Amino acid sequence: MTLTPQRHILMVFPHPDDEAFSSAGLIRLYRNMGVPVTYACLTLGEMGRNLGNPPFATRESLPEIRRKELLKACEAMGIEDLRMMGFRDKTVEFEDDEKMVKLVQDLIDEVNPSLIITFYPNYSVHPDHEATARAVVEAVRRMPKEKRPVVYGVAFANNTVAEIGEPDVVIDISSVKEDKLKTLLAHNSQTAWMIEENNKRVDEGQPMSDSWFHYEKFYTITFDEE
Image (tube, rainbow, N blue to C red; front, side, top):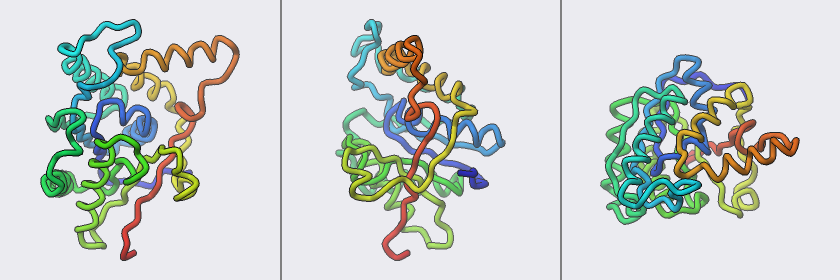
């Protein structure tokens, strides 16, 4: 699929590494084209289940480690405008909905994006993912139809395809797969196990997983009145 020209891209995800798995390739492609990108990362992922493989972090040191990893990941993607929004991991779901909508509205008003990338409501598994998706979609829904940016949703629940079909946006990122790999590697505390498993596949003569390094897939989120 050919990339659609963009004025400015806004990514909104709750955790460091959400962007690496979902959209690092797409972002690198757009940055190579000179498109500005703002990344609003709501938390530092300080409650992440992994502490490195082998472990090198503790619960006390993990927030700062993940902050540095996020900066390194943004460098790999070419993102110069990173916003660390300061929410606590695993508590985004408990934030007031209107507060979260206002946060997104303020970001939209500031950067005037033509494309927003976030999670797809009801198909992104984690409660913080769902709260983030809900806020973004509601913020855009409240905008005048003619001023709304396009919204790409990332969905990976087991029932996604059965219930809402195949993604309508499929991007070949093979030309920047090394940049995506660097982004994943940047989040070493969380992804070391995955990289090790992938390296084993390569050593055994199997190709790198298509799901990580060849294609990124999104759903264009639509609104009820459209």
